[in-house]
Length: 389
Figure 1 (cartoon, one colour):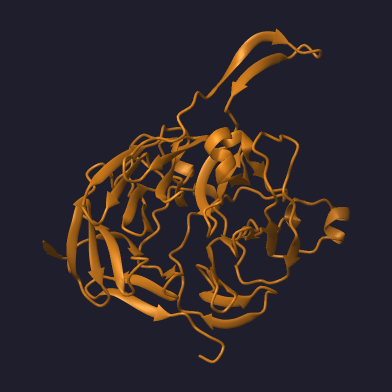
Figure 2: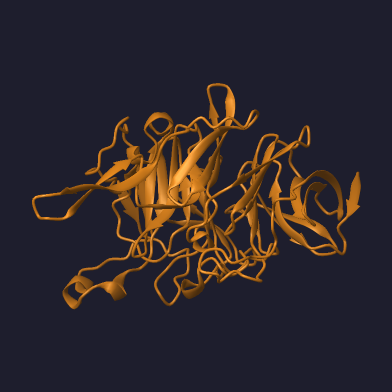
């Protein structure tokens, strides 16, 4: 069944990671497929659970506003999410079968719905947020939850030596999950989330450890950040990832500021993670790189996306004010497309409540292509620039 999208509101697009110049789209509550340069699309499935307007969730700041819709693609599977809402739909694009998921509401309006795919023991697994501080792992084909467990924190009735209440915990951490990043071999993943009061914190997980020990097996990244979770982040290989850092000079006292040197990229090497909790362990950066590809807003924050291109061994940075840049791992810019920019991200003071228009550019790492939807014309593509171009 076909559909003409010439006059329709396309809410999200993402590339088919198996086929070049083929894209999945979300419009009118449906998942569709279209090729480049065409407004004609094939209807794949209904996604009836996905809401397009916010309700009284979180602090209510999204009520009556358009929700940002996101698509996550892995082979034949597409997961449609309300980024700052409660609902997700997993669709098998071969059969058209759809399965709904949801997460409990607790500050959902400022925490991205956490979704990732894992290739594990010959199966495709969906890593999905079910509560503010809980992820679960589902078999994509059957829907079986592979991480059923009890999660609680409660007053034990006891006092410690200082006279404070002692709480019993089981599989519990004080942490708000947000955007996920999965390593190329699926053996590790990151949650780009936050903790009270609030401050962002990236946590590192071993898939093997998580399947038996859950959230408490993770370790936090030991770098001071601010009010800026979902920051630019990318895996370089199976155990190396890079984060873009904020400029925190305004938060320092005079003596600290005198010796402060801002370096925008921090690289991390994931060690062998324990199968049991290690509350005192932190992951420190292996090294820093001095560059300035991400513009800093008035709060010193960096916004945008970061990807890795294995063919050139370069990073690809998408920004909302400086276009898209290709840079070597030592921070040298080798190519720049100044007119290929993201849509403006949410602001510091209104995190999560600004709908990110789909007309900004995105990047398809497997096809080395930038893409966007143009009303009346369909999907436009732009090849990854090189130093010679």
